[in-house]
Length: 143
Image (cartoon, rainbow, N blue to C red; front, side, top):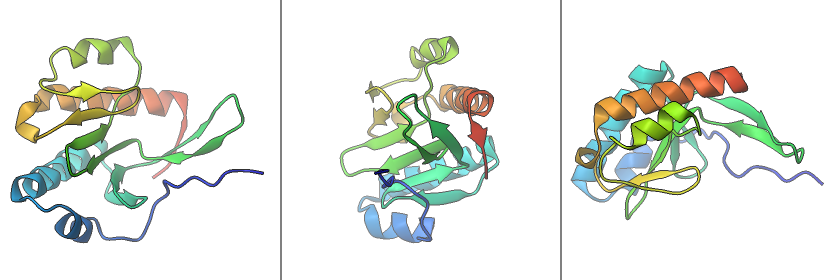
C-alpha cells in the first residue's frame, strides 16, 4: 500500500500563514524578506506545502525504493525556535558555499538559522540557484 505524502501544496494563503503562525515581528519581517528573495531567485510564486512550509516551484522525485512524490524546489519554514531552509543539494559547489554561509546548523536535508542577519544572503542566493540547477538537471520539474 502506497504511503501518502504529508507535505503537499495547500490553498492556505502564505501571508495569512505568516501573520497567524509567526509571533515575533523580526521573524515575520525575515519571513517576508525570504519570500521576496526566493521568489526572485526561483521565478516561482510562494505556495504553502503542508501546514508550515513555504515552497517555490515543484519537482517530482522517485527513490530506488519506489517511494515517490512531489516537493518544492526551494522552501523554508519559520518554525518557533529557528528557520528551516530547504535549499540544499549534495553538490561539491554547495559544500564549498556552506563554509561562507554564516551562523547555522545543518542536518541531512535542512539548514537551520535563528535570524536572517545570521547568514550571508549572497551565499544563500548562490546556494538556492545551485539547488535549482541541480534539481532541474536531476528531476522532473513543474510549476
